[in-house]
Image 1 (tube, rainbow, N blue to C red):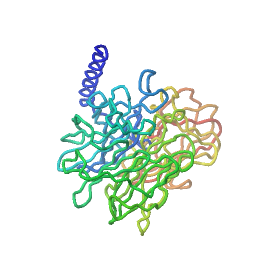
Image 2 (image 1 turned 90 degrees about the vertical axis):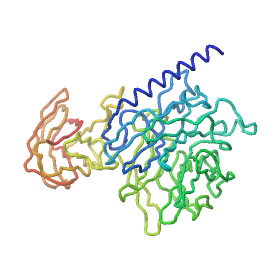
Image 3 (image 1 turned 120 degrees about the vertical axis):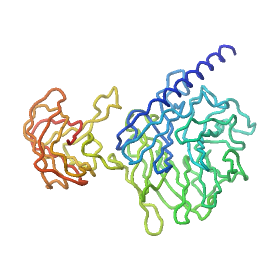
Image 4 (image 1 turned 60 degrees about the vertical axis):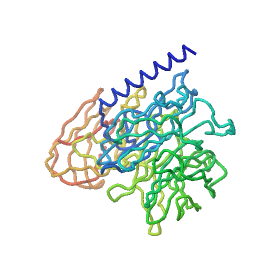
Length: 465
């Protein structure tokens, strides 16, 4: 027992030091999809706070053999991220660790999908974790999530620091907490454990203020989890992942009351054809546009327990039905022309002669490269902001093998305005090639790179200056 306490104290001091360090270091990531490009993130809850988008995700890590359950989800802490333009994301550092939560099992690495929300100038962060001991004698150890409890941490700012409550919320057993505050100020807590459950929250946001209700009329077959509720034009939308076939797709149901009854409406995002068994969503409106936040295993194609958050635009029909969202690599937000335009996050490509590959398979966070290997291969990247027309050169980071021919830079479409023609030459190593623009351009345009030659051309990025 003494050795366990010493180990626990070491963990606590380590986490405290990491918290201090993470609060002093502010990092930025210029993102398409995935949004966060220097660490694994999953289960995003997006909120609009003080005119910015804040995302409260979970944080996947690679478990050591002594951590949690091998080859399974492994999560020991949370970060929070924000953006004012949906392109540049700021990492505010670690806001909560399993070693700071008095009631959590500090060896479980089970800090799964969270939620964060503001009320009356305070910020409440809801999170699940396995408890140190089972304090509900009726809990079935064979039921997924039955050993999980849901806790709350409170802060004065969305960036933290967050102070966890000493105990989890009474009468709540399960995972994937979600909080919705209605127009009348009443807050509701939702969670999952084979079924979906809901209850009113007390005004202090720390305890239930009603009986727990089992939300019915959802699929009985196949795992369902991750409830997320929002309201639009008097309609309450319950969105959730569901394994209808082999992997999770995102579905939704609607009601005229926050606690239902809900009626199934359809699929928001189909299951991924390759890669990731899970998905997890939130939906938010920002500056007049609705967005779907979700995740995929972009940086870990061989291991789908290390995931990365994404976002794409979402639209409604006139009758309030959600149009199906097709996941993209391009994602959301404008890309400034003077930034490094990552063409591997493309909007469209030729059917043949184009593919993407990791720059370094041993370090996927270095990102990808575009590979053009056939004549007339091309790639399109939407919505590049050339601003006021002051740019007159393009810089291309590239590598070429057995190459001949030219690379065209165009805007608009494949036969659109020609910005530059770059004559290609062999280069075994990465080089940054500068080329003049034929004319200056202003405003937002789709950018095309068209390969007219033979050989293999690899492109890391394009930038205008």
